[in-house]
Length: 225
Image 1 (cartoon, one colour):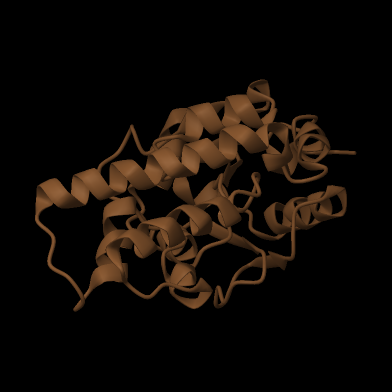
Image 2 (cartoon, one colour):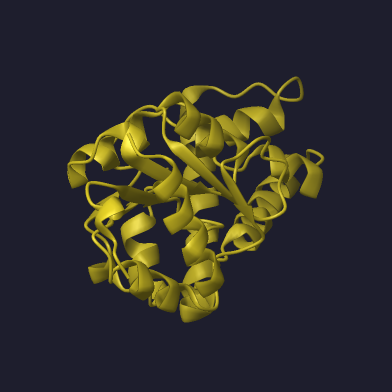
């Protein structure tokens, strides 16, 4: 297969909900926090938290219900993270969506640059414990590396810079509305996965699998810059 049209192109992956099946563990951790704070929490509210920082998530959950100062916010979000990490460490390699390593291996046969861009400060540890092969990626950007969370495009632009590819030559794979919006603001292509209401995307699929590789090739073939 001639892959010249994939040269100087990049695919940037979100981590939670795209490569790793970690959404349920976020929900369980926030549910425990909500119970401790005696505030109502359900899956509909949890959906609003996808793709945003822990602090912003807590503010969404508690808005108009209780007042928290910065010290309390830090203590609560730190506890939420500890609960989440306890869940995912027990899950281990069960975190990895089926077929992801095969999907990435197929992309690595091409000139495409691959990067992870996650708002999670836990991203390096999640990659380690999940069995996701780190050497598939040319760069990893985590919440430790930037200050402005999605829908700000900072994290995606940083990933593009690390792999040396212009933003307009990047395709972002995301499962959260905030992430899709961040990609749009960065003027990158959008590949939405999962069942969330993501709005208009260049590509959509329920999950990533080998059959989706052709969608990525077709996108870049039709979006020469």
